[in-house]
Image 1 (cartoon, rainbow, N blue to C red):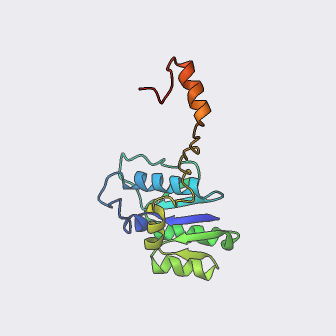
Image 2 (spheres, rainbow, N blue to C red):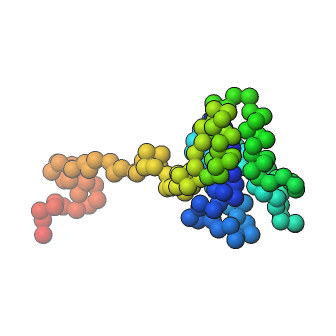
Amino acid sequence: MHYLVDGHNLIGQSRSISLGDPDDEAKLVTLLHRWALRHKQMSLTVVFDGGVYGHPQNLSRPHVRVLFARSPQDADARLIHLIKAVDDPRRFCLVTSDRLVAAEAIARGMRVQDSRSFSMELEAPQSSARRAAPLRRPPEHRLTPAEVDEWMRLFGADSPTDD
């Protein structure tokens, strides 16, 4: 499955990233990258409105392709263009809360997930099933009285009952 993500729309629904943060795009890409690594066979294309002058434009990471819309186009127009260009819309999911962009995806038969629900999934802690199993203590082995006597003899003690 490939996800098309409306970047700033998703940041607007995020609990951990603010649209006012100068590194908001990079922070979202990091979250998306971690999510993609946890969900095998997933890749994402995230589209942002034009970046700030001097801001790094190459934020792509493995499994996460980053695109910035160029003037006069905005991210919504770029997403619509991508949606129309998809060969098999059933293999894609659009993440947005923008009704116009979502309507275009639905018309093509593409799955749509709203930004709020995807943000909750993105920022949720890993499920306990995916976490490493806690270390377990091996079962305690109780020594027999004969084994205790043998250890006491080896360490030069007379007997555990001697006081």
